[in-house]
Length: 95
Length: 503
Image (cartoon, rainbow over all chains, first blue to last red; front, side):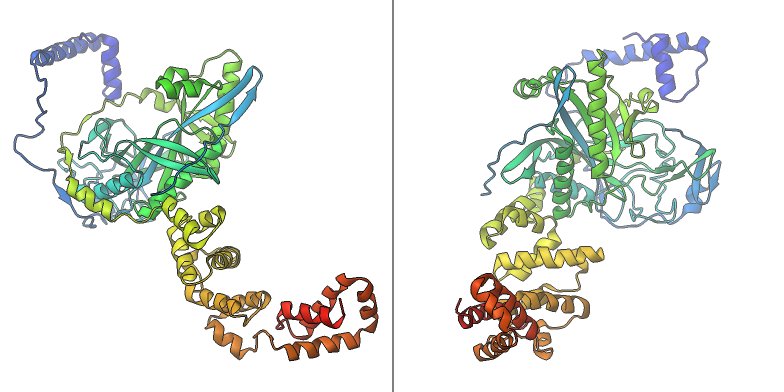
């Protein structure tokens, strides 16, 4: 499936990655090459084969409903560019 | 087996300039799981904590942190599914829903798009005696809640609190089977009631623990039936989704407004655009959330941090065996066992606590009398004080005691109400209060006769009138009751008055 520059721009915007206009065609070409490579997998007949989700036969690990974490707002906020009154402060998000 | 025969309610019809229109409504209800810790971290879910204090590094999406699922949350989703008579999927899986927002540090929400834990079920929504809507449930999946953004604390900044981030939600998705604003509110009410019976969600809408997204479209009469017959959605109109409502009143207002908005567009020859809208309660209208449009491409994919969730049939069976009696069954039993009316049974089974209280009072007593006292006196009095049943100062034993005194003929209905007020405000054993304060009804015929004789002797003019107008007997009864401080048995007084006046 070839990716055009418009789709590349859309994907970049969704990922919040800035791509200059002149770089879009090259990026689109790279996307197309990667997808083309992966599409080769479609040639394999996997009819009736359970998808393998893990290399070892493991069961999803569970934990009990017990509070074991939290109560460290200063650590949570330590990397925030801006924090006020215990909140993360970010540029106004308008709805 | 529960008898569930009922008629479907009429859909809500709006007459437009070009003919009649009907509404079609589907709902996505987000119910917060009543767990102590979050879905994938050990941070607390407690409401109202200091900002960012119920946050672990997993919730804050620090690099290298991995999610570990809270088994209790899984159990509550299964329990909810069983309560809605739904199919439980022994294998389900988690997917990432990708979008950017300041209150979503991961940049994705862990949800279950492709393989939800619960499949098809149903909710019976009663709209009156013998009238109900069967709303089909499409699925229930488990997902993470996002954090909270506060926009009004600073003119230039939004403030973000991650305490809610990662709290477990059950998203309960209905089919488009709801046909009017009242039905929509009744559906949420019924769902909330079932969740509270099951104990899987506290149903607190004010705190946002239960909120609804509502999908609304309009169609012409007959179109909906064509959709149900064929399963073909093209018979229905284009829908708009109104996001995140946490009040029954707003849900109804939003649906009403939205349906009329769509009808106006269609009658003007326009087209409804499928979009996400927000209800503004101050203006009573919905408006487009343009910011959501671009972000609609969520690029779901299976979460590589989480293996599929596999559960065992034995575990599901054990949960099924632990289910409580649910509202519809309890209501049917109250009607059959205690001879209650449909209405009284509905009121008493609205929540588990009221139902349990009533059963305690009614056990071994007249069910109807018990229902009257619980609903009219106790609920009325609690409402006046703004209390709910769990804070009733009158215990079921005390209320039962009052009812026993009425049944034995020890007190009249009027005195019983006074007694109730005393027990409500001062406490104490009803029988003892009656004894100590001399509230016992006078049934002794001699004493009543004496009182009647006195009233007759004191009012010769009234006696004359009463011979022409027998209705005046009531006046004498009233006088005697007054003279005895309300303690005389009114029935006995009435008989004696009539006999003495030769009526």
